[in-house]
Length: 216
Image (cartoon, rainbow, N blue to C red; front, side, top):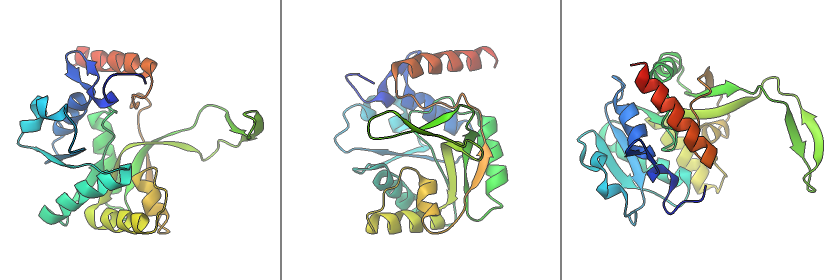
């Protein structure tokens, strides 16, 4: 998405995407604190109202996603080592509180952890080097990974630390757990929990947030 600032700072109805996301998380009764991993050179975050919220803690972001998440996990481990962490994309402001509740209820009894996800509905094509179709993938058993992803502090810290120390490519927290031979639980979430990455995503997020406000 072309913009003069990072996508999480794009405005929707007078608030940034990040503010919508953090506000949504704080509205859940089982979320006690939100940790945001922000680059030390970020000029936008200090201007936001959430920067001084007592339930919001800023930590230094890293070069890659896994570095930033580990920075947040380190903070939680130093304060609540037995806690569970919901890891959520800043650019997913439309996550529903019901989905967060369902994730917690289904995953906490499972010591491995789990993620919100949606089953693949579209036909999936595998491309070759020439950007033509190599073959059609069997979509049975394929899921789109969403966030939040929920793991205990101990499990997540161990998995991320090991992955980073060994130079592994980590695209989400579940992939760090998987490489240790564990199998996180898939919890079906809503498909409107979209990640804002393209201009059309921003329009959809506006629609979903407006619809949510109208139905309160």
